[in-house]
Image (cartoon, rainbow, N blue to C red; front, side, top):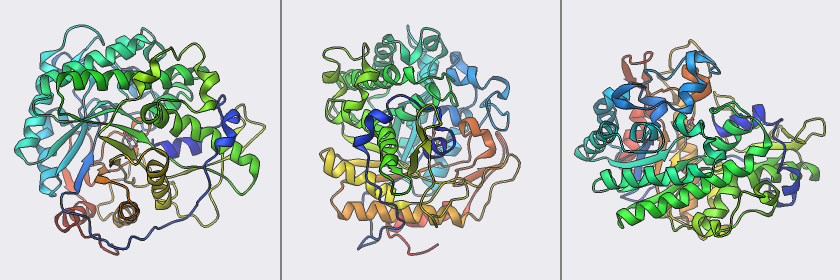
Length: 481
Ligand code: FCB
């Protein structure tokens, strides 16, 4: 499940933070395509793909891996649309050489994968598990051998269960544990692995996992917003310090699920609702990292959580911002819901993708413009963008996926236009290389450039794979599919 999908389907219970933040509403700029002047990407632009450990590796008990919150949450297929588990997925714990060959075979030069914290520190604290480290060492070497640049995300939502048992992100101690883990990875792999991403989409992990209970750890309640938001921000700051202390030459970034929050219709009170989500979802992560502050509306949430000196830790120099973008979200005021925020309708005539989300490259242009104008224009990598086949529990993947090519092409137009407007964008990573285990949607949602016939099954490149290969070779964005 992705951020925009979640907010549309399940926002109603989201309470605190919304109304208070209203006056920070982002401006509605619904629209569609954004046309660049030139369709030629520069040489050296990094074409890549992204995955996450829990969605791909399988082998959940191999080589001393400790259990995570996702193992607990999805045990026996509980909470998952098709009742599947991540026990096998793309079997990338064993098939990683094939994964890397597919990536290199498409002429892609970058691979964003994530490291499973509980393979490295199975109990969340204590000594490193050498066998877990060895797996990622082999994965990194495989990429370097194939001419693919590794980008490792340190945390893509799979918290060690042992830490959850002590409160997880509600417990400030988890921040120090994350820094210890980051230091271990940096020390062992930092001689070859030079690109690190701290956290993936901390907003999704907070709201969907700790407020709405749709993702692991399945907690509910607006009271969790403050501690989970701040402890992730603090952990990130401490981890960046720890990584840099080990190797000064690392390139470190953070990946956020940036999402324009737009009021449904033109009604002023709907702006209160959309501004509320904008503060919780976007600014509560951008501001502490890039400005050393929180939006005013977060103050009440952070009482007793934010300590003196913390904002000096959350604000760290980053080498790039990772932007994950899928779609904007529309919100309205709804006095009958507990939160007074409700998912709203997009403007009439908006196109929907096969997943049911609206296709709006202007939303990506808008988030890139925030970074240029409000956040000092950091270097950027689009660390995720892509679309799914229609959700279905049984249908095979669509091999002739012209809808995916269309989606990617139009979002790349927005990327290129943002570069022309002055955004220093270094790369674009498609989510994802192979159909994988899509969290609470299980295998019923497919985002890959390559299909796989069931967990561990035969793989077959889709039309989008060949299309991206041609683009990576020429750098010239076609005008149509
Ligand atoms: C993003 C997640 C990723 C995957 C894609 C479709 O929100 O980071 O793991 O679920 O959506």
